[in-house]
Image 1 (cartoon, helix red, strand yellow):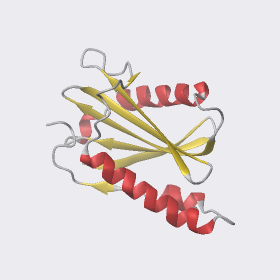
Image 2 (cartoon, helix red, strand yellow):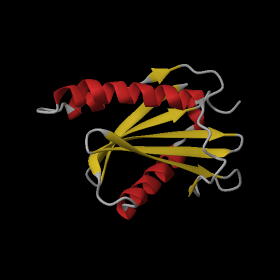
Image 3 (cartoon, rainbow, N blue to C red):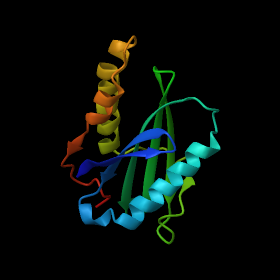
Image 4 (cartoon, rainbow, N blue to C red):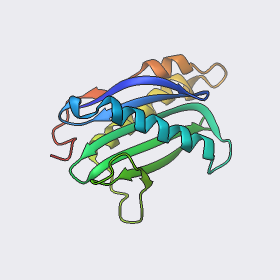
Length: 151
C-alpha cells in the first residue's frame, strides 16, 4: 500500500508525506517522527543552495533491508531535486545518503513520482501566472501495491 499520510510544514516548506508498506501499521509514529526530524535537517543543510519553491514530497518505506526515504523538492517551478536515503536494519532511523549501487527505485516510487509530476504540471506549470500550490498539495496518490514493503 502506498498512501499520503500527511502534509506538514517543515520550517516553511510544505511536504506531502507518503508511506509505502504492505502493512500500514509498520509505519509507526516513531518512524514518522524520525523521518520528519531528518527531513528538517536536510532542509537546513541546503546542499544546493536555497533553491526550493517551498513545496516537496517525501516517501518512507520500511523493508527487510532497512528503511528507505526519498525527498523530492520542486524548485524553479520546472525542476525537481531528488535525494534518497537509507537506514540500516540495525539502525532503521539513522538515515544516510544512498551510495552508488543503491539508486534502484521500486516500481511503486515511480508511480508516486509520475503522479506528483502530473499534479505539479496541472496545478503549477499549466498556470505559471497564478500557480495553484494548494491544489497541488490537495492532490494525493494512493494505491494498493503488492510488495511495496519489500515482502
